[in-house]
Length: 286
Image (tube, rainbow, N blue to C red; front, side, top):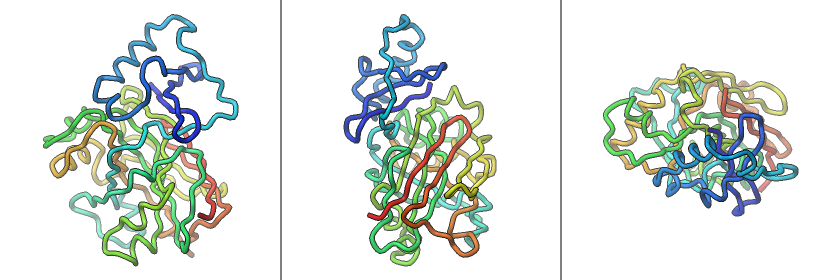
């Protein structure tokens, strides 16, 4: 299934993308896509309704002029894994990690996939990062391996882990200041359930700035795979339904490029991951 939320900020309706491209209103099945929805078996209910509903029983949404929000409402937490692609670690001059590099991001950073991103006041080093996001579907504690990790995933989405490198690397020994600025985590357009993704370690990620390609990588080059990340994190924190994990970015960020071409007001970033859809953001001054 491909699930999405449509409408103005704070007024989103839950919906599903049908195989023929129609957007179907799921408001009769749930008020929202959030942790309680996932924890109560909401995905199974939606799947059953979509497979058995009579034609026309789920209203079609006219998407003309309608905003697409993040596919999951505000998560309880966003956990991020840094330096998880060998080429990205190399471009930043960092050694290959022997354990996942873990940091947290303010859940309030999540916005829709086409919303404007605000360049913070005083920023001179705002950067982009296309990432595969994982949404947790079942409470996870002390999982023992990658297979158990994969079994606790509700779905996948495109994520832009926007970063301010001066705030991140020069203002504090921890990374949170440069990761948690307002609007710094566009997510979506869809939450794609695992049955639609043959192998999460065989997905191509792409990102362009003002039409110029910047990132082109594959999840097969992750240092720590998706299932292993979920299992690893579950041994240090409880992962709950609706939590988001950003799994790292491949090479091609401004920090690692000649001349460090950081983002400026008026720039446009476009990003896509196989099977998960595309995003597009305009960057504007806060």
